[in-house]
Length: 555
Image (cartoon, rainbow, N blue to C red; front, side):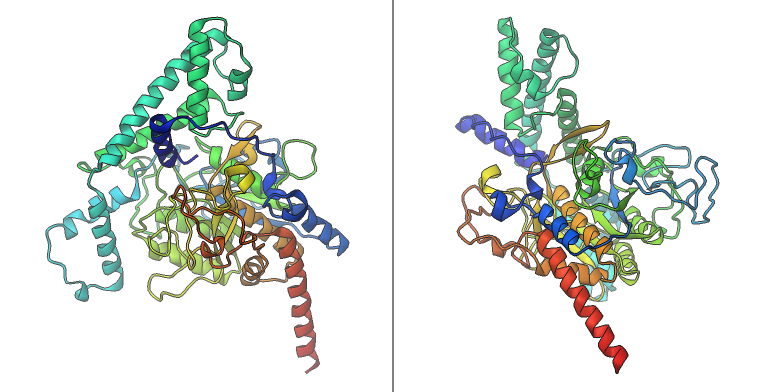
């Protein structure tokens, strides 16, 4: 859910009137075929039929999910989770001598040796501002005398300092959040009392017939609020209110940080030497963490066990998912991201999913070194473009495949925007998605994607965070069935095989209400990933590679 955009929407709706409830969304629409199902999905069934017709035999590959944690015991994920065969579970010994004891299913870089887990983190803008404030504030800086790294950090600090001022929009958003949260909680308590249950879904409320006037008003007010917030019908009251409270707390902390340095939650709990990238053996093996909602949903999109007659089918089969906990509630840390990439590569991941991002990256050089390492080890990285409706050709968003010092681009890095469908949201591009003709490679379905949630639950989520794992799943499918293709070739196959929507299909520019744009202008390829086209192109590339190899052998 993208609360900043939604809160703004809600404010407008209170002024201009309520919107109609959205249509029901077909579960798994993102897997559909544009030609036969009339939905802009990825043609997954056709892809599997193609592989079957080609008598392809797949090999198991490992996919690393760098996220906030995964519910590894979920019924639809438990059988596809990665297990480190070199470790003996629970003995407290680093059996494989990789520096991480008992890393059975991955590693938690947001923890400490005592088993503690970091849940919250401040925003990177505030961290950057206060970290470099003494070094740069009030000083005359001659940028010509700075080395590349210091110049990068100085320009980043200047941008952070410019954005640190409290705006009227920030204040209005907090006020509005407080109003909507207060009303939600009031009506929630009334409904709990009227229905005689502490937890319930939106569907439950819709079916419920209150007997009292207060109950009827509570039902109407509650349903009005959650529909304006664009919550899904199977979401619970506790989850909705908890997420709203967490978002509001983060906003309040960000505003307070305008005048006071934010609390360093990470230093208090993790206790590593953050300034030293070589101090890397911190954390613990709790790969679920305190909030596994996001990561569990991402993991299910990629590879929830197929054809087991429960839950959902992920995009890829014959994979193992490695959980690397790296993303707190708040902005991730560059050091954790870099070390998580190194960890994933060293432990056999062939594809890495990164459904996160931020506007500042002071230690970009560390992340760059990890991306280069992944490229050298033939590992593909799939990254979500972000949910701010930004043109990231013009506005910085990290991580980025462009290396800081050389300005060259990583050949193993795909950036993914989120597409929708006119039948679902009235437009082809998700209204929240970042875009960029140069810096976004492809789009993939990312609106109302149905997948796994903690506690053997399932539900819809939206975001480029959901679009990236669709691409990761396709990449894993290719690497599993066409193992001779390199990471760079898999990227090439995915990009060259996109489905190009008809130019007459309605596409509203993200972040606007009625500004139309050609979908082709939102990304480098101008299209939506397509699994069928991708495996067909991979098959052709594999054949060409073999022909070229045979030709060389004859020479």
